[in-house]
Amino acid sequence: MNMVLGYYLNDQIFEKKDSLGLISFDDFWKVYGTKQIMDMEADAKMLKEMDDMMATNFMTKNWESIKSGVGELELGVEIGTPVVIENYNLNNNSFTLIMLIDYEVEGVEPFTMAMSANGFLISDRMVWMAYYLNYKNEETIQKLKDNSNRILAKLSDSTK
Image (cartoon, rainbow, N blue to C red; front, top):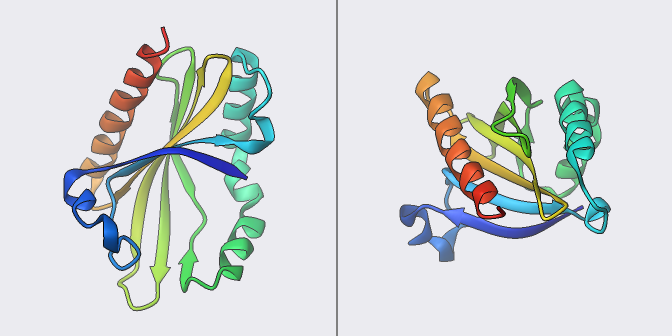
């Protein structure tokens, strides 16, 4: 459903890039496009519709089908329902949802991932970014927001 445009890994994780399937990691970003709308011209109206759709339980409304799709992959991962804890607009061309998601992975202590999901407009196209951090405490959320806002602002500025 998505086409990955790029990943960002911090230096510590990048050094282990050849063993990513064998280690657990966080503090990474994914920039991607949705294949269903990749040829559609996007505008402020579409951005608002996407924001509204995600903010009004898009993740939970479709969660059972997403969860069963993950189960079919037989990865040994149990993913909890994402909980949106904040929704805001950094600027007129973007929106951000801050979420927490519980994970249970075979052979690993259960953990909670903090995630920002961003939708933004670039050259009349809808582009997405997700940023992930292992949740430790309230400071995790602030770091997540600060880093997400900084990269989103740079991406937005690069299109002016």
